Image 1 (cartoon, rainbow, N blue to C red):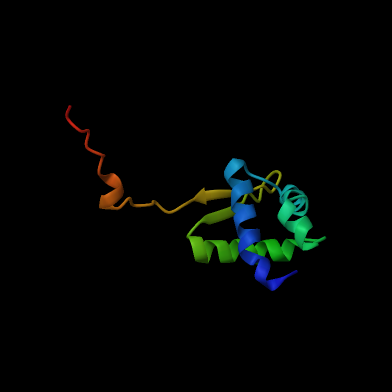
Image 2: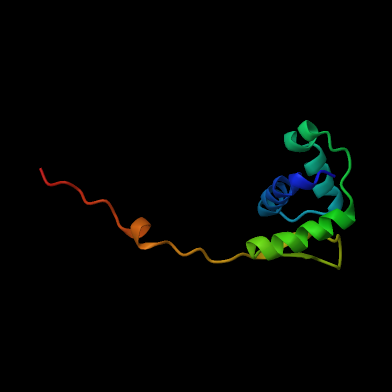
Length: 98
């Protein structure tokens, strides 16, 4: 697996898990069928790589991704950081008086 491809993998994993929980097989299919993976010529994605990616996503983006150990072993995003909006973005544009 290409070392410089990690941010693309992280973004794809987050995007997939934001839509719904997924098993390893579903994540693998999603990634391997993505344009980014096909364009890079990547043909495999191991469970071990997924585990490393989840740990790195947690560290870099402060997202908690867990695996439901019972049942169908789906991965899901448990929590994400709260984004604070700065003062500039909070201000509403003032309407001009006619």
